[in-house]
Image 1: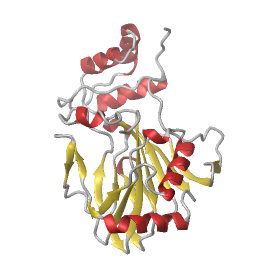
Image 2: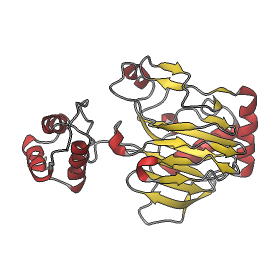
Image 3: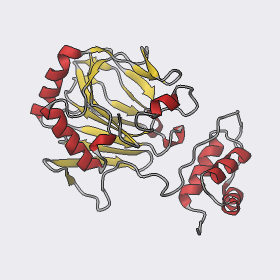
Image 4: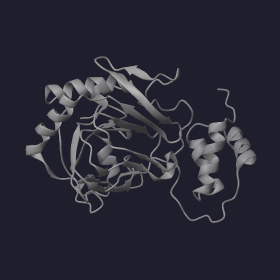
Length: 285
């Protein structure tokens, strides 16, 4: 197989050096990921810059070009709208790195209301995945309440899931159940990553249910008067919670170099309701 030193590979090497990984660790990761040793060495010689400090880090995870297919929208012709089957969804804004797309008109007002009313009787304090054990735990960084719906649990959920599958070119079966969350004034979710940390002992158990998370879609069901935006600190971006709109972002490897650190800013006034869909590598069971 003919391999060449690409712009993407050079950028990845720069990111690993800046993150404090050693030259030897980066070289080993490239070879383990399928790069020919001669090509890896050539890329390092052309690109490597020694970081100012080099703290010990775990082995980086490299995504070689074409190695993983991801959920995504087809924006190749810069469309203003995308046909999601039963609804035309607006493309409001997009970033390439990190991969973030802001969408308009993904949900109708009736769908937002139906999800809120279906979720309201089942709300409980939100938990987070405990990657140390593979279970769930209370986390002071997350102060919302919420509930999960099984795939296709209600007609509204089934219709929305089919729409998402068409929009993101990803099978319905590869998605986790829809989670509806309620944030009262003062509630927030501090910046975090959605992928499962491969260095944590509980991650192998989590991955048995459908592999790694690859992408997230956050849909806004209501609009707080102030606050409650979805923030991306590494990109200097905050997405306003507009009812019916959504923000999509993907991460091709479980590593901070994807720049997908994100959070739910504190609600200042009013209530925020969102529905979140996480997309996995394989069928989620």
